[in-house]
Length: 455
Image 1 (spheres, rainbow, N blue to C red):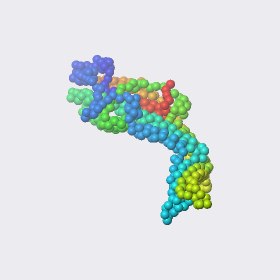
Image 2: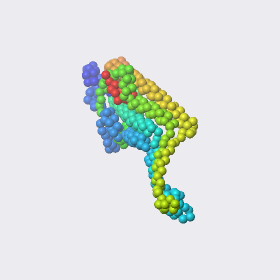
Image 3: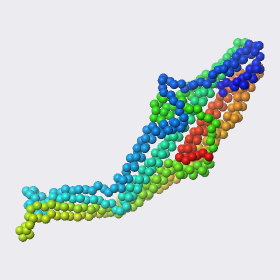
Image 4: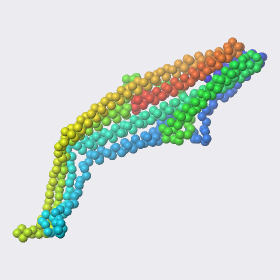
């Protein structure tokens, strides 16, 4: 709190005896509080940097549209979508052109009966079911990549909103600090007036100046911290790091009711993308295990060959030489199954178990995140209500009482300054609890996924 309300100041000013020099000085101080415009814009545009009013929702939309990391994951997903049809297709056929049995003394096609030009075609046919399993596994990989994009969106939105609310707290802290700096300057003026009239002590002036210097130092740190947070927010939105942003005004008392933990767990089981991704990875691992078992069965190869010959048969046979036609069938024999296929089955079995346990672990992590976010939100909600309705009004009354008592020299200046600093710290804690409550809501939304968390 930087200054007292007009009604309070009016009541206090009516109690001041303006016939004394001390009374007139304090009266001028109170009148200054009534007319001074204390709200200060602590974050004006610097160096011509662009400035815009930004809500948390708008920041999220910008990040989801422009963030390069998210765009990279989206293209990875689109690339994986092209894989299933590739692995589910037959291997490319082979076309052969052979020159067979040419005599090396003359290379004459008519000299030998087996000399021929061959034209062939061959195709490999995997054992029935293998191609379908390969395509199915690749499809699961693509689906899992799609869920990873959704998960990235959830995490990115949480990062943006968390950073936004941290900046919001720093803005309110700087505003509160500026008001208290102005009030301390007024306290210094009062203490100096009392000292000059012989009613006060020089140490009161020095004490107030020391507290003012402490606030100035705190303000320097807060401004630097805000710049760091702003750089992070601009980076998430793929904007220049120096881009200045003014946050939109919000209602600090808007604290919505949320669902119970049990309901949130149920929603997360269906809506959280990372759980869907882990489940899909389990299905992909199961498919690859079935494919490894299929590899114990042979693949087949079918080929046809046409051989063109020239020249004539021997006299006792008569006539020109006939062309030749051949059909070839081959099969891959799993001769080393004990060292290859069996080991591959063991490998895929272990990978399936790994993915199943990863799913169980991820469910535990998600539920822990939900429970922690609910606890943090309820704590911050209760704290903000306590500060706004209990502690801060009580601290304001204390400062007002101290000021009235100081005017008649019943309270020393040290206690007045301490009471004001205590009120200042309580106001910071209030805005911190508001920010932490909204950050907890953001984490809760991210932990649950796409479902609604509100009653």
